[in-house]
Amino acid sequence: MARYVALICLLCWPLTLLAAAPMRIVSLTPHLTELLFAIGAGDRIVATDDASDFPPEVTTRPHVANYRSINLEALLAQKPDLVVAWHSAQSRMLAPIEQLGIPVFYSEPTDFASLATEIRALGKRLELEQAANSQADAYLARLAELKQRYGQPKHIKVFYQLWHPPLTSVSGAAWPAQAIELCGGENLMAKAKTPYPQVSLEQVIKANPALILAGSQDPGALRHWQQWPMIDAVKHQRLQLINSDELHRFTPRALNAVQQVCDAIEQANHSSPHETTPQPFQNGPNFAREYE
Image 1: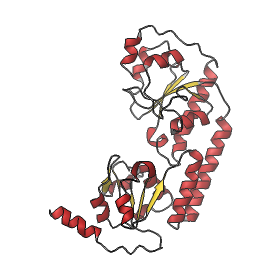
Image 2 (image 1 turned 60 degrees about the horizontal axis):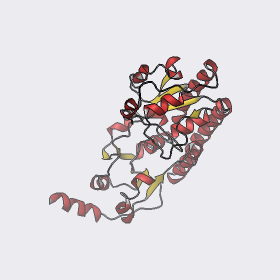
Image 3 (image 1 turned 135 degrees about the horizontal axis):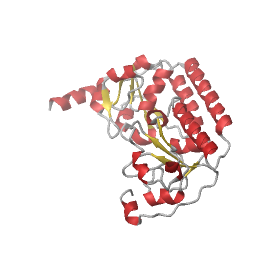
Image 4 (image 1 turned 90 degrees about the horizontal axis):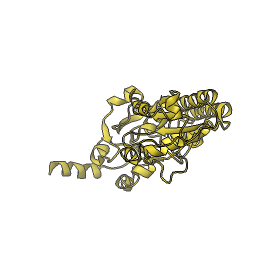
């Protein structure tokens, strides 16, 4: 009962939210936490979500959310004058916060270029436009350099392993898929109907990618492919880990991982023929089902 009385008190606390730059910010998603630090607002963050771990100093802040839920009571206890969040995943959960009159800045970058727009908008909201514009300009300059250097089509088929097991890849607008395209590669699952399709082992073997990438920090994440030496990427040991903490977060650091993807595709392009022959599936469909 005491908990609910406390929550009612918090809900009744008078909101004097002025037009001044927010100084008590709750960040509910890792990429926004990182962007706040990048534009010089890290010291304004009073709480974050469980996954916000960069830069390291942010880990000392209280946690009020995880990828599934938001603890509204704990959030309100921080008396924020701004909450920053991921729109598609968190807007419904934050409806009670907005009804109280607490401002919410929503982010949802859809591609690499749109991230610069998000950085500028966040800087404007926090009255840190100069720092934000500088970060956005530097980011766009590096993005342009990567496109110019690596953007020519190379006809290298790439399979991106997002997860295993189950074997899961990326398509469409997912950032790893965009990175492969930016770097001139051909994403094996580009035409999949879902952003993160589960893939059968048979599909990969038949398509015979020249390069297999995995977004992981685990050194053994690609080890299971060694049992399929008929795949061109395995035969020539073109199996490479990509820093998932960078590529899967919508921040300028993602371009570090894009550089990794581009370098891997470039190396595969120089060491293999542009056309690869699909290989016969020798072990029957039962093996494939284990990975679906």
